[in-house]
Image 1: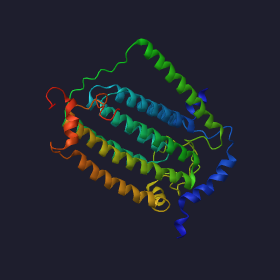
Image 2 (image 1 turned 135 degrees about the vertical axis):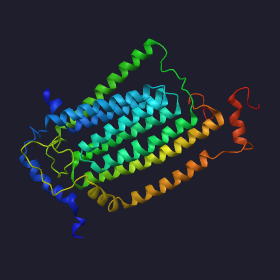
Image 3 (image 1 turned 90 degrees about the horizontal axis):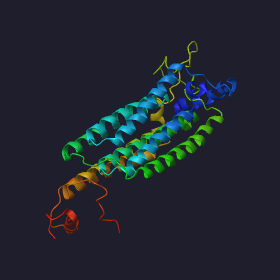
Image 4 (image 1 turned 120 degrees about the vertical axis):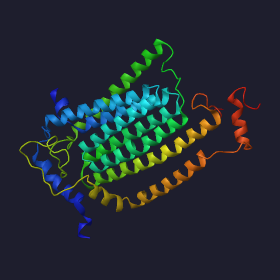
Length: 240
Length: 109
């Protein structure tokens, strides 16, 4: 029970003097490597997302999605969410995308949908609107940096795990190694203590999803009246 | 000006998440294939997760770890959503032989 207070609370306690002595105006300096890595991963994420929504070929879209998820997992690791980075790769890039590939292969339809808007004017208007929205949202989000503790990737105030050392470290400054903020151990403590009820509720959600998925994808019989009505707009082949 | 490029702040991650979320929204609104729409929804969920984790890192401490727990639960719910949604797509294909959401107008009255 002594450990109930846990690494997280110790980290919170330690964070205060660390922030106090660092001047907020300068913030923490992260290495150039971390900045380069962030921009590379951001480019991969945005490019992969654009790739996903512009492909006609479904398999190509799924592959772009996998690349996006890997880049996002690396970004999670930059945010010291090591456990969630692994979970992201396992669950998203592993399980969910395999499910998508399964469905694409089962259906095996060539996509004949054109990716086009009607009219150049609509495109220009939409582009302007999106640009305006992005500028305004970026302005709002950028102003968050004026708050204290804003610098993310520096010598972390909340402890360290040695993943990505050398990229996120400042050379010559050793972070404390006895803390494990964001590791499997600390996230597991949070999950099984404060978040035990949501954790168990999620298992129920997954059970319902499994049953619902099976019930939905089971072959149905033609005497179902709903389905007879639904098949009427299928074209001339359907029973009128 | 160089600070924007070299000094990473929480805003970098927030803006990146906002851009990814916007791309996902565009995918949901523009594409007609149900599978691409579902992938765009996954993109939006991931952008939300990135926001949660950025704020968790920003806050730090025990409350930040609760953000990690929230992100974990979001991933689990996204997996359930993908399973049910793909089952719906398969059932649609079985009855309609297409997954064009512009032509699925049975409930549109």
